Length: 200
Image 1: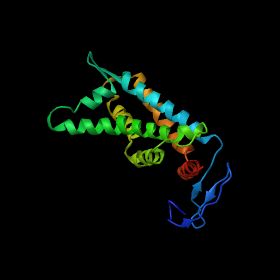
Image 2: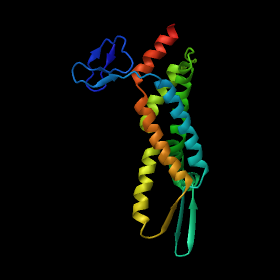
Image 3: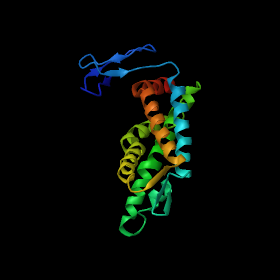
Image 4: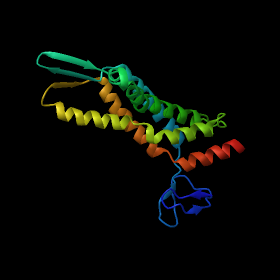
């Protein structure tokens, strides 16, 4: 039995052909959307997002210059900016929300889906890994960080000269790739495939 995520109506789902959609009989919300090759696409997008995360952390993020003074910053500088005194917990929160949790979520998705994408049985603990990935989704806030940076740039653009570094564009690409990955992923299809492959 599957509950509709919108209206909680229970459904007994049968096999849904690839390329079609199963909708709620009450509110017509989409329940399942199996796609051919979706797991491979999800793995490739997740791996790409991990590479972009490394680039976003490793490379310069912003260069600011005003009145002859220049300031170079990176994501690490952002995290450590609050590392003194009572603001230390804020540094841990920033690191967790924009780097650690998104990275853990991507790794969990790859661990849960990659063996099935190449035709093997799910890895041990795949269900727990996929559940972790879904539970972390509201807390992985790399996209919120990018929106905040853009808002800040609009406000300081008239006071200083701003040069965007490679890490800024890596974060933009990371947000786009992660959004595309979430679009391709049908949670119910993944859960159903995990159950079927585990019992086969």
